[in-house]
Every structure is written in structure tokens, then in C-alpha cells.
Amino acid sequence: MVVGEVAVETDVVVIGGGPGGYAAAIRLGQLGQSVVLIEKEELGGVCLNRGCIPSKALIHAAGEYHKLAGLGKLGIQLPEGEASFHMPKWQTWKASVVNQLSSGVAHLCQANGVTVVKGSATFLSNDRIGVETGGDFETYKFRQAIVATGSRPYIPPFLTPDHQYLLDSTDVLNLQEIPNTLAIIGGGYIGMEMGMAFAKLGTKVTILEAADRILPQTASHLSQEVWKQAKKLGITVKTGTRVETANVANGQVVLELLTPSNVREQISTDKALVTIGRVPNTKDIGLTQAGVMVDERGYIPVDPTCRTSIPHIYAIGDVTPGPALAHRASKQGIVAAEVITGMPSSVDSPYVPYVIFTEPQIAGVGLTREEAEQQGYQVTVASFPYRANGKALSIDEKEGFAEVIVDEKSHLLLGMHVVGADASNLIGEGALALEMAARVEDLALTVHPHPTLSEVWLEAAEAALGHAIHIVNKTKVVVQS
Ligand SMILES: Cc1cc2nc3c(=O)[nH]c(=O)nc-3n(C[C@H](O)[C@H](O)[C@H](O)COP(=O)(O)OP(=O)(O)OC[C@H]3O[C@@H](n4cnc5c(N)ncnc54)[C@H](O)[C@@H]3O)c2cc1C
Image (cartoon, rainbow, N blue to C red; front, side, top):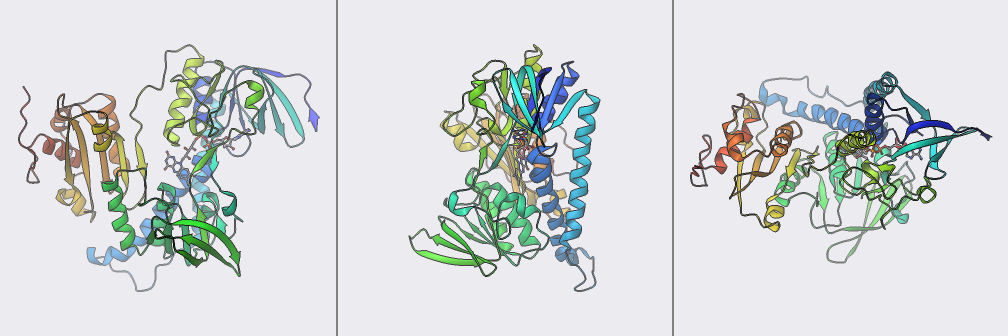
């Protein structure tokens, strides 16, 4: 190994080039700081290379393929037996999407004066970092640092993927063939998204979930819509079921399960996907040398300015406690960059939207009814079904509903949740409404374009006030003076 003798000096070092790290580096560049961004793999991190983007590319392709079967009723006729799904071609397309985005990030870094270094970084002290690249070792002296090293799949020892039969989420997105059978250990959002995509491609999918329902982090009335659709797709869902062992034999994965009635059962499957959570990458990056504290689960606690226990070292994204979401990472990255340059920025909004790209999609922002009630609010909850929305019917998407959670006293919107087609795009309106402290009247008074799915918000808001037009109102008319 060649060791660089003189440390390169820079204002800020950012470790990790995911959506948190690269957003921070670009913002720092915009604000005139000298920045070194260190990434050991590919720019874009998990999100762009093996998370959000490739998984959504698979979900999109599987959805389009699956839709072909329903085209007949719309009057579109396909020659029988002609449609097929070619996984290697999909892989090529996915790679082109990922490459385009990844080189876009590289270009933006360059345009903003960010020095990108390919290598693995470790803190040597609280103002020096060592970067190993191939056979070289460089040291960087920094005034401030941002830790954005992200997370990796949580794997219990008895479920260690062999990457051929027992897979993690990266492996499943790199498959060259569609498996006949796939067991998914974990019915959280990644498991359900992948399971539904493969079911649409013709795989016989079994979901094994230890909790008593799928998507246990989501309100149960929302996840029920996904459960209904999973059954329609032929997915077997086994809840209250623990996977105890996994063995590969004769090209099959044999899983031993403990059922809710404590009975042991075996299933055999072509491939099994382990997706039961994620852990932060904080172990091997020298946080102790830098004096940065981690909690008992390995996360780095931060204040609203993203400062760690060492004031000039910041942490953002999946290494910090909170939902592991790309948009949260980017927001924190921008805040950390601004705080470093003295701007009065902070991550103070409780309104981080979430999206689950299942069938139907689920998206939400703010409190659920249960959370609002636990916090002592008296709430009005009103919903509007997709089947009463003209656009939803005209695109053959009648499953789902939009729901508003309203504080009875002030009429402030506390939460907005939607399960149904394009929920992922619809929730942008919710995030803006809650961020701007909108009252339910603001939503109801906003002229929504017709015919669009966005009208579900208008009518849910009107329903909360007792005067929706396209459903029979359950709530009495509330007149605010
Ligand atoms: C299958 C899947 C689907 C997902 N779908 C969504 C979604 O739809 N929406 C959403 O919001 N989120 C989604 N996520 C989560 C999202 O990918 C993460 O929340 C996001 O990537 C976190 O960003 P980050 O910047 O904190 O870290 P990461 O994206 O994990 O990036 C960290 C980077 O740091 C690098 N690194 C680590 N250690 C070092 C080191 N010592 N030196 C140098 N570099 C290092 C890594 O190589 C990596 O590139 C998904 C995740 C998965 C796995």
C-alpha cells in the first residue's frame, strides 16, 4: 500500500455518495465550500443503484406486463400467447436508467466543484480521514465532516444469503431469470413491493411475515387493501409465521417455519428473499477515533441541525434514527450543508411523506387516526373512494380511497393518507398542505382539475365538512364562522 504523506486539506469531507451525501456535497459546492465526497462503490448509493430506482423500474415493467391481461375488456386485442417477459432485456434497460442517473450525479458534482474520490473512508481522528483506494491510502484533513454511509440489509446469522438461492434485495433485482417460486421472508414494504412485482411476472410468491399482518408499520385499514390485492395476484401470505432455518439442497431453498399455532412446517422454493430490515453502516468507519457517539442499535443520534456528539461532525440519512427514506436523507444533507455554512437551517418538520409502491400504492403524510387520538386530538376522519372518481373509473383503477384526518377544534389537517392508483404522486399535495398548516377548508376551496385523481382530496375534504358532491355524506355539515 502506498501511503500519502501529506494530508489534503478541505473545508468539508462527505463520506458516502447516496442521496444524502451527494445532495449535501452539491449544496456545499453551491455555498462556496471546498468539498471532498468519498464513495467506495457507485455515486447514487443504495437508492439509485440497488434500491428505489431499480425496484421501481421492476415494479413498473411488471405492472405494464400484467396490465396486458386486462386489455381485452378495454377493447384492445392482442394475438393470443404472444406476450412474454424477457428478464435480460429488462436488466439492460434498468442498467441504462441507473447509469443515466448516476452519470447525472457525477456531472452535477463536477459542475458544483465537488471533488469525488473513489475509495473507502475511515476516520483517523476528529479532523482527519483516511481513504483507501486500490493500493493507495490518502489522508484528508477537514474542518467539518458529514457521515452519510447509509445502511445495508439486516441478516440474522441463520439466513445468510448465498446470493444464488437465498437472496438479499440487491440479488433479487439482479436476477436474469424469473423464478417459478419465490418465498419472501418479511412482509414489510420492500418484501411486498418485490413480491407483487414477481407475482405479476408469473412467479408463485409466498410471503412469510412474523407480525400478524403485512406492512405492519402502516395503518391496518390501508394495508388491508394491499392484502386483498395480493390474494387476487395469487400470493400466499403467511402471517404470524417465523422462519427458523434455511438450507439450500438440490437447487432449492428449504425453509423451516414456525406457524402461529407453534407447528413446525417446511416449504421448498426456487429462491428465497430475505428482507427483514436494515442496519446502519457505522461499524467500520472509525467513529470511535473521531469520538462520535452511536446508540445501542448502531445509529448516530443527531440534533435537528444534523450535528452528532462532535459538533463539527454531522450525520444524515440511514445512519441516523428515523425512517430509512431517500427523501429524508436528501433533506438532512441539504440542512447539514447549510448549517455548516452558517445558515439557520434545521430538520424541524414532522411531515415526511412515505410511499409504498405496492398494488395498490399506499402513501401518506402526517398522523394516522390512531396517532392523532393518542396525541389527544378529537378528530374528524373522512374518506373518498376511488370508485366515485371519474378519472379512476376511466383508467380502470377503482380500488382505494383517500382519507383526511382533521382536528375537530381548529380544522387543521393532521394527516392525509391515500391507497390507490398513483398514490405516490398524489401525496405531494398532502405534504404541501400539511407543511403550510392548511385547514381542511383550504383543501376543499382549492379548485382541483377535472378529470383527475387529485379530486379525491377535494372530495375527502368536502366529506369532512359534510358536503362532498359525489358520495352520500356521513358527517353533518360543519359551518365555520
Ligand atoms: C430495495 C429498496 C427499495 C427502496 N425503495 C425506496 C423508495 O421507494 N423510496 C425511498 O425513499 N427509499 C427507498 N429505499 C431506501 C433508500 O434507498 C435509502 O433510504 C437511501 O438510499 C438512504 O440514503 P443515504 O444517503 O443515507 O445512504 P445510501 O444510499 O445507503 O448511500 C450510502 C453510500 O455510502 C457508501 N459508503 C458506505 N461506507 C463507506 C465508506 N466507509 N467510505 C466510502 N463510502 C462509503 C456506500 O457505498 C453508499 O453508496 C429503498 C431501499 C431498498 C433497499
